[in-house]
Length: 304
Ligand code: ATP
Ligand code: MG
Image 1 (cartoon, rainbow, N blue to C red):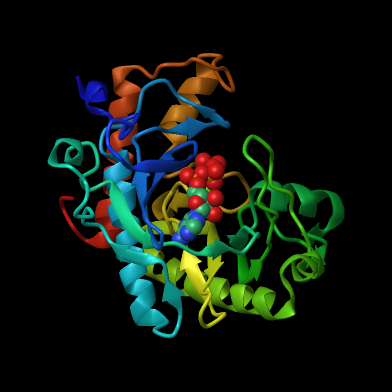
Image 2 (cartoon, rainbow, N blue to C red):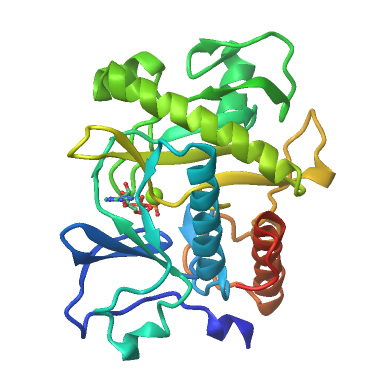
């Protein structure tokens, strides 16, 4: 059974490895003072709820996809530091623990985090579309009149939000508010880097059949140099809206590249937003194939 292969929990408690955080999808462990191990499980969330069972290989596919983007970003913007170290396991991981971590883990350098979600939007959708319909603005910024839902923006825009505590929702903020929180210098660097990466990545993905409608980056600070560092996962379907380019149609909401089948199933079976939901085999299989397809299209690789 495919779903029984999914890794939804990672347990290193019997080893001397400290877990420092657990998100909806990822577990973070401390390797040493400077190094963290990000482990992407196969958990999946939809409408803010984590499903009981997972999507086999999802964690590995997203970790390897992130690693692919980190490589590309380093060639596009050689002066931008990233936290990425490697996708191999640190030497202090006991061999008995390796199978639950392999492929899905990423060693990263630890940094102090810039307390902003650095969101870039290349298309008008979601909360930005709702605001625009009501007020003609996005994050308080005036936008051209007559935009249609899901329309590609002439120039991508930076729309930061706060980083909310667990369980709370991030709050959209203006550029001025972002400057208040992190200072003009950091805000400007984060904005510029985010827009540059997004524009390159959008083009790269579009040539491969995937529209990245918007995405969220996080940045850290390098203590020694004071420079910003790109951290977290990057340009995965968990941190971005991926749309199938061949189905793109302006003037309406778009289907999600990866989660549409799951969302439709949840909605049609009256389970949208409910807790304690297990996906049937067919939903797992369809969803798994979409994650694999996204990975293959973007990386050009046929296996992990
Ligand atoms: P959600 O599941 O909703 O995303 P979350 O953000 O709490 O919840 P994760 O995304 O798994 O869960 O957590 C990753 C955390 O690690 C974030 O708080 C992020 O800011 C932080 N982080 C990312 N990269 C680094 C790094 N290099 N050094 C230190 N912290 C980092
Ligand atoms: Mg997160």
